[in-house]
Length: 154
Image 1 (cartoon, rainbow, N blue to C red):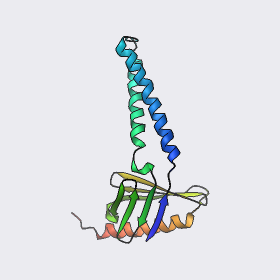
Image 2: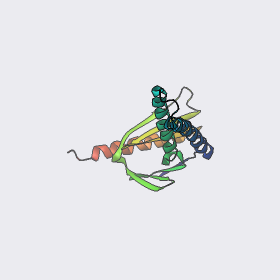
Image 3: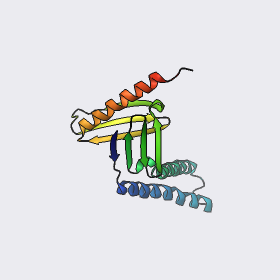
Image 4: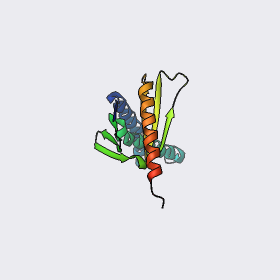
């Protein structure tokens, strides 16, 4: 079993939430002015404010996803257990859609494993831990390949 924890910064979440609040409040002020009768001839500005408001809501909702908090990955022999802020989730290796390794020019600085399970994307960064990244990637590849080969065809 391989155990790896990805730490996420609380300051980053708070910064995103503050930026999202500002992005939502500015168009709301424009909506209020529009309702009161100011700027009724500026329909293009209203459309841009609606788009900006929707982007702010998207950004705010994104800050509450489980991938924005600390995540612990447990790569076991039969499944992947992911412990996150809302509890624990187990995934079989047969459920994994894609496993890819992102390696920069200087592989000693960082490596990234991109794991796609169903509709969820997990980006697992390894900073100055190339050996551990290679070990996890080989483990994932061997177990995912074995699970896909053992899967019955429909």
